[in-house]
Length: 252
Image (cartoon, rainbow, N blue to C red; front, top):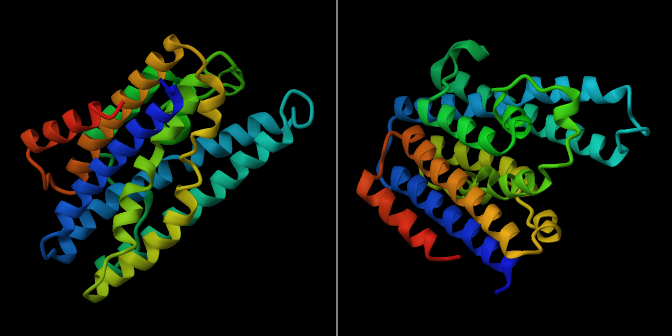
């Protein structure tokens, strides 16, 4: 068995399933109020990563070019810029729809997204903290080298392979749909950079490594499906979600 090919196939299967959730939502005509709900949840997800990234950069800067590699530091800087840009784009659009100024306090952290943070934290507290702002991250946590496989497996699931952005960027029709397509087309170009199997490929060498990575990808991606379904107002039933999961489980 080619372990890494199987893991990529598994992650792509879940990405396809996540696209199915989003397409089910957009398969019906939607009101501005319905869009506001999921956009508030998405803006929260973008904003939640900003503070921990700033904290991480502050902690690591004093060790730059010593214990901290400048390439790793640059990568965090790029991610911070991406997250701020995405949050700004969505918040600006929300203010257009609602007609008033918004702050982070107006955004929504939905229950299934909270559970996603908990699932990720089982495998890497530091990575869950960077993605959700749900953990206070120490310098030692950031610099850990004993959970590289776990972090790489979680990274492969990040953004569901760009599922939400992939669907949204192709939307057509009314003015709101066209605005969503423009905004998420831009975000798509950034987010798909994060889903990268190359690092995981260098870490999965044995059956034990494969089983560990597969378990992480399936666990995180399964919760991502529930998170996305809740975000979009449950366009799929529980039985439909379970059917998607069974289909994904058979891909690796």
